[in-house]
Image 1 (cartoon, rainbow, N blue to C red):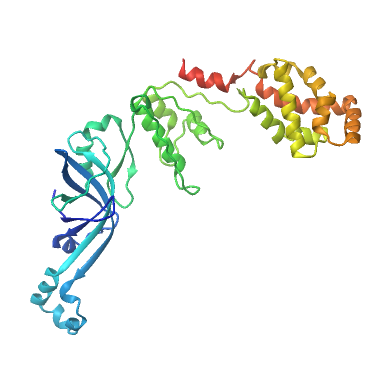
Image 2: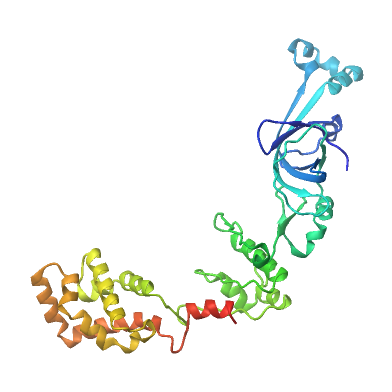
Length: 367
């Protein structure tokens, strides 16, 4: 572990600079994005701070005066002059702290200590990280490599019940940038390190369901079905809107409004009136102690509520319009159209042949 140079403290928290040795210049290695480590003592413990090089500045005091560079050919052909130039080089590396670890335990710690010139600085290699994190290897999962390096990216995973808190992670990127693949890798990591973590995936596109169901590898060789089997977890259950029952009154209201059943079948034009109508219908159903799961068997009750004068007042502001609609409702053919659409919505809440969302969630947490 060769030292890079002398650590130069800065006034900015979480940043530091290194006055690098001449050897760094001679090696001509790429510097931007390279990982560096700084070893220092805090509270009698050896701490390793890991940072990345954001920028560098190379100066040469001998070459600052332009007049000294007039005879360029002479300088290039004269080893003595060249040595003078080299010995006057100053390379400053501007670095930003990424994380800090206790060297003995491998535990991550807050970086809240100013760095002094006595701190040792060195380039981080993959083998060094493995040594630092060896005591955490059972909870470690690797997500590829850091950009522009050969250093594997460690991802520390631990059962939330042990951490007493949960992580909140946002994965963002353009279409095709690898978001789903990264999430699959994270799921695989959690499945490996803990058998107690339950996972729920909302999958509007169906990509994860397809991966678990078909067992086919994706372009990166991830076969989620095989991975799940190897980790010893029980088979994944896949639900869609056809075999999952909704179980919230608010969802019923949302279905009624987004399907536009009131507008298309009952001619309730204004959005505000549609919302008032849905709210009134739901309040009456609750007042009559009718459960969501029993709505499909209570079409007659729903019909009575909708044909009531109170409902019509909520739905239609104009009296003449109310009378017109009331007459239309008495035509069996017109009402049957509404009934068909209504049954499609209410069937979403029928638990006689489907598992409800609540039962699904609490059944998993309380098997």
